Amino acid sequence: MGSMSIWHWIVVLAVVLLLFGRGKISDLMGDVAKGIKSFKKGMAEDETPAASTAPEAPRPLQHQASPAPEAEKKPV
Image (cartoon, rainbow, N blue to C red; front, top):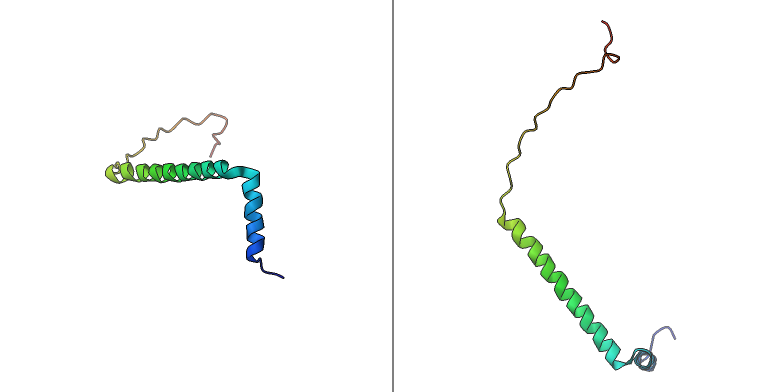
């Protein structure tokens, strides 16, 4: 009673085919495959330039001391 028999799966498959039709399902699966290929291609392109470029040496920042306003200065 808890498990699905082969007849349950055949009925589910028939309902899905009636709702979506054969053409829509194959088009959908083709679009999914194109999306996966595009994703993999994008990931491969992201890894290639990052490995070929050498990291740039860090440059020191030049700090400039700004004069403090007269109100903030306290007598000692």
